[in-house]
Image 1 (cartoon, helix red, strand yellow):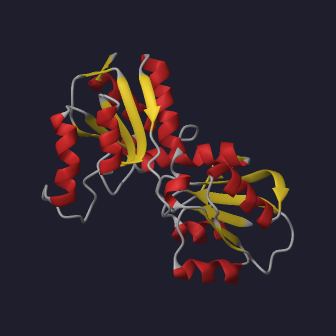
Image 2 (cartoon, helix red, strand yellow):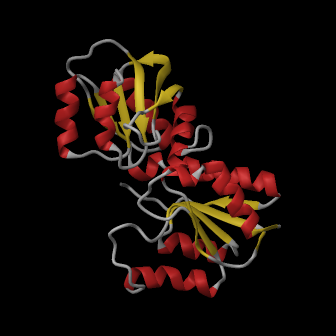
Image 3 (tube, one colour):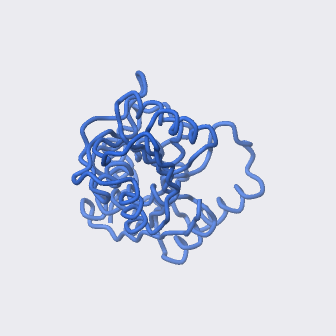
Length: 254
């Protein structure tokens, strides 16, 4: 068992949340009981995940997608009310880290994708003066676009959408990747000389960008590419503070 305040301090230190200009508050979003012995983690603080946290008798729910996004309606009504009530009623803390959880060099979503898919990280995926969230690197074993698509499907348990470049015949060696809704980062991947770019979502215009610039584009699913960082951080906390940790995967086809 550990104090909630100690865990939040460690997470803020570990994930360097203060360095990111994010779309939501990072850290403690809903305060529950002061002592934590069990953490449930998941990708998104949806009602189904919150109900599982209640049934698991969790003290803390750790997620990548939490509450209070920029531009959303601020009032606690409807869906937001229905999500908050069980947290408050059961004294469960909601802790969320968005961009900091994508960017962490070893525990983050993109570092974990590299580990699982066989990418060697060389540098951050540069976005001007902003902290890098994704990475650029090399395949441990160069392969065709079709072979990488098959590997993604095997590892992530989701068939990726592949926009194969007709201009590029040699195996993929240099690759850039950024989980989630980072389709527009393809421009940075092109600038940094990647043969392929892997992300979660895809937009109509990014298909043309890929084709016209001779780069393979993989859309492997927003949810599917962001399952691993929160698991790694939950496991880290469990070891450091001798806590129980359960990851709950609420299926999402997007």
